[in-house]
Amino acid sequence: MTLSEELQWRGFVNQTTFKDLSALDKAPISFYWGVDPSADSMTIGNLAPAMMVRHFIEHGHKAFLLVGGATGMIGDPDGKKDERTLLTLEDIAFNKSSIAREYQTVFAGQDFSVVDNYDWFKDINYIDFLRTVGKNVPLSQMLGRDFVQSRIGDDGSGISYAEFSYSLIQGYDFLHLYKEHGVTLQVCGADQWGNSLAGVDLIRRVEGAEAHVYSTPLVINKSTGVKFGKSEGGAIWLNAKKTSVYAFYQFWLNVEDASVGELLRFYTLLDKPEVERLEAQVTSNPGAREAQKALAYAVTTIVHGEERTDSVVRVTSVLFGGIDFTTLTQEDIETLAAEIPHGSINKTVSELLIEGEIVKSNGEARRLIENGAISINGDKVTKDLVINEQSLIKKGKNTFILVR
Image 1 (spheres, rainbow, N blue to C red):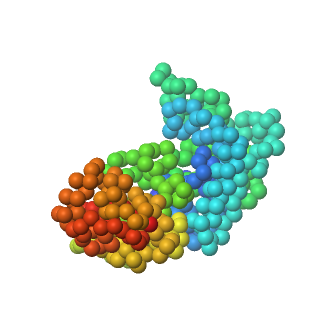
Image 2 (image 1 turned 180 degrees about the horizontal axis):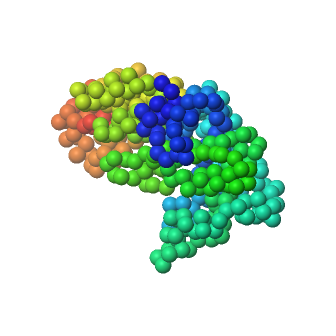
Image 3 (image 1 turned 90 degrees about the vertical axis):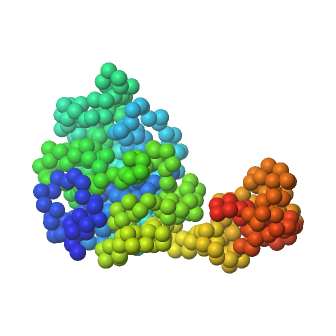
């Protein structure tokens, strides 16, 4: 399958300046994709275009992955109703290093270069910038941007000169990478289309050369209509300190049937026959959730590695699949301890149920125990026992206490 065919099959085609996508199937292209360090991690919203970038690399194109140290000092105003709060230089430095590490993980084994636009902006002369960039960007072009119009309109909150100029900085990134590394293509999410076009126009005006933009659609939750991204509630982060590996895996495991086929195309490297087989399983045997399991395993492995993914699979199997608790390793237990309430050994079941805020009184705890609603390591109990070893208490289908 050629790159253009792969992109179309996976649903990665949105807007592009290419007249014919087959241009991507010819000689290798140097291209770039970037993330601003507005946080110390990417989200699954960033992961979708990152996966698209992997396909570009695997088809022989040269990738420059940008960490926006300079643009991060301003913050992209597109889509924002109000002025951003500026991050400290220390926060930006920390966020840059965190995102660079995530690049190394997501693109492990691939050929790419990491660049930081702060490196070419830190010593730039303001007058030179105005002569090179400002003189070649029509004000009408900048004023015509939708986010500018929304901010300066009657109901807008206003916009600073810094945020108004953001697209100039991004446009210069493209120009610089063109001149220094022969980059002729920027790939981006759909929400960066306007900013990316600024670079195409700047290269044409300054260098008299042709450059292109290729954007991928934003991934939308079909149930809520909300995009996957860090500015939305309930964001799913790639950093395990912000979204645990267990919670990350569970997110994908619980996606709806209507979305799982699309997400398999976007977020995994599974080939067409396998994706189509899994989609058929959604229709023929939806209760097995084979497609969701394949999606969860594939994405979590890309982001967190096979070892940690296998651990959360074992933990999930113990909690919801009837697998024996004693099969868990100590590392698995630590994963589990971060996700559910836990108590100390040498206490009675009723004491632990109260401490775990599962019941409010000893009487309520005894009734649950006597009615067979409580199990320990998979075995139902009918007496209020003292637990003196590492164990898992379960009430119903979804309530647990780890005893350790």
